[in-house]
Image (cartoon, rainbow, N blue to C red; front, top):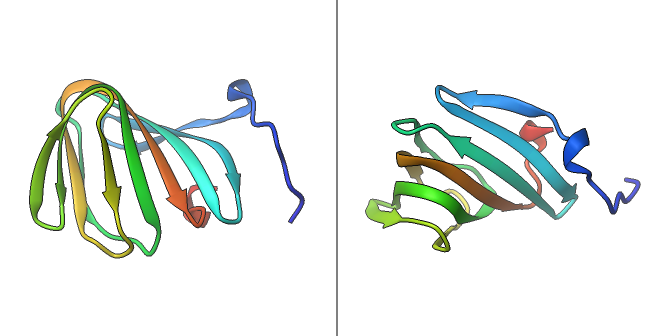
Length: 110
């Protein structure tokens, strides 16, 4: 794999990620990926799991996350960790933006 060091926002494609959701992949390499996710108020992401580690940072908005059966209400500056294969979901209480970091990268997002 050729290493790329710069990922201009203008070159990233914003794609639908569900009803009321869009996402744009930023920098990524074999072992890590960053993804910007925009939620409209009321949008939700259903319970799911994946083999990747995931850290979510809340840039704006208010969200209710369920991670491994525990519910967390989070806002700007808060972050969450989701270990591999843990079931998690999200519901947007006030429209906003999340920044997700995955390791390794999500092949299904490319």
